[in-house]
Length: 268
Ligand code: GLP
Image (spheres, rainbow, N blue to C red):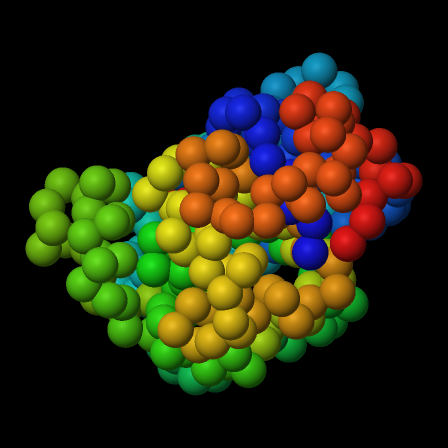
C-alpha cells in the first residue's frame, strides 16, 4: 500500500486527477469504479475541467458505481444516480450505455446484485476503483462486521452512517436505512484501488485501515490484502498515522510534499 500525504484536499484532488489521467492515457479502454460522497467531488470537478480542456476523453470509459440507497429512484435528488449525473456524468463524453449503476428500486434485489457482478465480469473486471472511506471504516456501504469476502448485496446502514449522510437530505428521517453496495470481495477484485480521505473526521478510520489489524470491524482494512493500493490523504486525515516518516521516505520527501511523484517510481 502506498500512502501519500498532501497538505490539503485540493492537492489530494490534483494528485488523484493526475493518477487517473495517467491511467486513461495508458489504456485505450478503462473500466472505472466510482464512489460518491463529498470526498471525490473535487476530483470530479477536475475530471470535468480536464475534459473541457481536451486533456481527457471518456468515450472508451466504462463506469460502475459502488452503491445506491434502497428506495430512491434514479431521478430522486438524493440518489447517488442523480449525484453522479450532476457532478460528473452530464458534463463529460461518457457513452450512456457504458455507465452502470445499482438500482435503488430493483424488482428482485438478489438477482439485480448478481446481474451487477455479471456486468462487471462481462467487461473484463474493474481496472481502477476509486474509493472514499466512512468514519466507521466502511467502503462503499460495507458497514463494520461486513464479511471481507462479501459480494454485491443489500445492507442495513448503521445509525452513525445515517447521521453522517443526513446532511444530503432535507430531514434525518428521509435517509434510507438500507443500501445496495458492491461487496468487499467485489472491490478487492479491481486491479487497482485508489482511496481518497480528507478531513480530521476520517483520521481514526484511516489509521485503522492502514495500520490496524485486518478486521471486519474496519472493512477498509481488507485493502491490506490487495497488491495495488494507493491512498491519497490530506494531513488532517493522516494525523493518527504513526508511520508517516516511512510513507514519506517511500514516496520521496519532496515529492510527497508536492504530489509530483513520477508514476514509474511508485512503490507499493
Ligand atoms: C458514503 C458512501 C461511500 C463514501 C463514504 C464517505 O456513505 N457510501 O461510498 O465513500 O460514505 O463519504 P464522504 O466522502 O461523503 O465522507
